[in-house]
Image 1 (cartoon, rainbow, N blue to C red):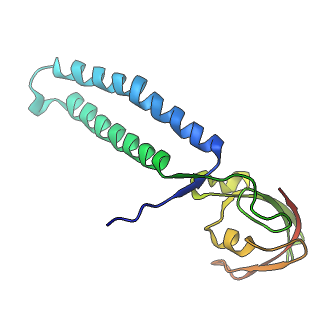
Image 2: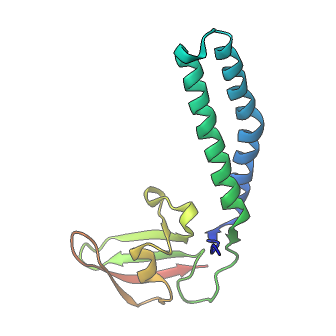
Length: 158
């Protein structure tokens, strides 16, 4: 018996996945189908690189469609943060690096919305796990490849 994995995400992310799935199943699938038809018209399929490329593209497309369907079917929507005053999924956290004295702001998100370059970190990442459940003023140590990093939580925005 397989255990279904739930994917934590915001309602906006879920809607984005549904939009992408709709595009792939309508517009993109028709485009790939047209590529295959065109490539077939070139003759012998055994030596037809255009046909091989189109079939490969079709395989990638169907794989992506299956992946999106799985994400949508197993989506767990993140609503409002669970508990005020502590770091939880969906909140924004302002931390200060105790070594560098730099302040950074991070939004704690599910694994499907991670984008470290725009300050979106997963609750499953070492940094996210270190922050979860902590309050303003708490000190957090995160193990990193370059050594332990030390932060203090400055603010939590729910």
